[in-house]
Length: 310
Ligand SMILES: Cc1cc2nc3c(=O)[nH]c(=O)nc-3n(C[C@H](O)[C@H](O)[C@H](O)COP(=O)(O)O)c2cc1C
Ligand SMILES: Nc1ncnc2c1ncn2[C@@H]1O[C@H](COP(=O)(O)OP(=O)(O)O)[C@@H](O)[C@H]1O
Image 1: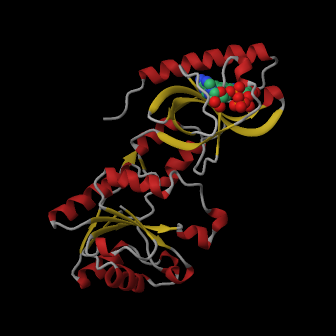
Image 2: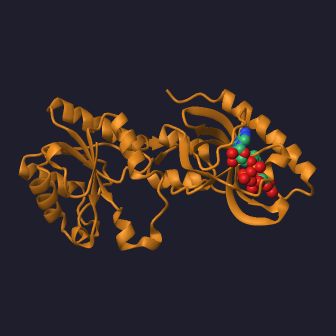
Image 3: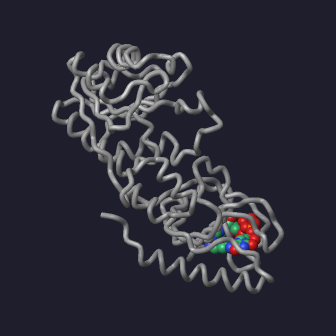
């Protein structure tokens, strides 16, 4: 259950808690969650994830706030599918961010949430200016009689998995390592809007995605899946401008393979498998059409060969 605002904590008092942003719920997060759930189940207490809403960076240094990998509702849904009982989206304000680590521990974790134990990664910092670390938290927990466990980070290609590593990979179009770090395909969602109605003339109508509020992969052509309602189709996706037609507006266009319905104003989810190529300026429309046919064939093949991680 997602708890927003300062009310509604009654149902989740006295649990085992993990504090963090959990953006992307990547494999490192998943390890923390496994330990959180083991701890909670063994003591017969609720397993709780505590996130700050909005993330403190939006209040402290908004110009540095990176686009999110997923919104809070999607984060909560994945955390719950992993066994978390409650996700708290704790309202962040400047007064909260001014609390020292000791004050945050006492006022929020002990007085308000009556926490019985904590599980964190080694790079966890808390309190004003992120001045509290896991060794301080260890001491505070020991003094208050709370259980405390630090979970070692997960490694991918010799590097610690983090939300920023995932973001960098996606932004650079490196979807294979992003999938590896996430343990699932990266997904964005939006609403289908009208474009120039040129796609259908080219023989490849493209659903133009608008209102994507999370991070978009870097510009280029990708293969993946498009999800309309309950149905999932292989897809060739283009993110970028249409230089062949001297159009400089950046678009997210999805050609759904084996689909022919009108879906304007509907929700569409897109999952990215791999980057196929950069956006090019073609000398004429026939050359673009020939390349689109090749892209679609490649996308079909890659999607057919793809197997989800076990
Ligand atoms: C898989 C795929 C790859 C594309 N690659 C390019 C490209 O390299 N250069 C380009 O100018 N347009 C590219 N396009 C965009 C087409 O020009 C675009 O789909 C067309 O202009 C339709 O726009 P509309 O949806 O607004 O009607 C690509 C589209 C798709 C679906
Ligand atoms: N296979 C398909 N993939 C994507 N959209 C499709 C497909 N078949 C039909 N459509 C419909 O056609 C629209 C795209 O056609 P297009 O000519 O590119 O128009 P627009 O420029 O308005 O996007 C989509 O928004 C959708 O409603």
